[in-house]
Length: 255
Ligand code: NAI
Image 1 (cartoon, helix red, strand yellow):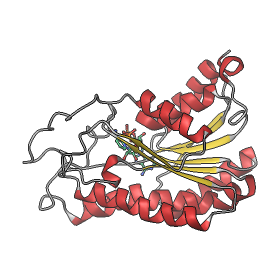
Image 2: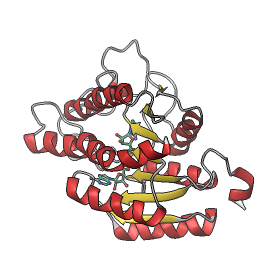
Image 3: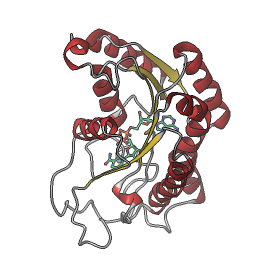
Image 4: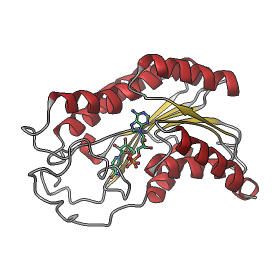
């Protein structure tokens, strides 16, 4: 039913691999692209959650989906997993580097292991997936969508490791976009503002001694569906940058 109404020729039957697709923005995007007729490969850390999402996509969106257990921080696991996806669907048209983790702690409270894990997932995770999927993306003139953040553009207070990982994504993918010029592959960096997901609840280091979350200076907290819709529209137009701001940019540091 959904496929008949919403199927879009840009995404119909296209193979989209989404990392961290079991929750939040990744899950909302999986639903949106399933409605548009995409075939989905979801990578995440919990097999039961993957199985339930794949069932939901089949039952509610008549979508073909494959859920694969994979920690994107593990380069070898990513290579194996992407190879499985290519074997099953014949290739990958769109890679969505979405998996991410955060922390909320002052620099002094943020141990080296937190810096290492945040970089391993947010930065190296996207790097591993892109290395593994790139031959297929080039062969198909596909798209790479990267979930950065407003904090990839301006610092978010008490998230030194998270900010560093998102800034690093801009450095990597803006270079890659330049190198891929003429290949037919589009690279879109997405910078959502505050979005209502479990990201902050699952923070590696919690509130600690830092002040409580300051209210947003303007706008509202986005829903994962708001962000997924914006990404969907941006992908249709093959945009290069999406900034979904709901903060006051006059504030020099986003609290
Ligand atoms: P979330 O916490 O709701 O979902 C993240 C998903 O990624 C979960 O399903 C989790 O199991 C999975 N994941 C975590 N580590 C993984 C790993 N090593 N390998 C595979 N999967 C892994 O997070 P949310 O909010 O949906 O965030 C998605 C992306 O959007 C992240 O990159 C985040 O930095 C970015 N973002 C989120 C914002 C927000 O306010 N929620 C704002 C700006 C950017």
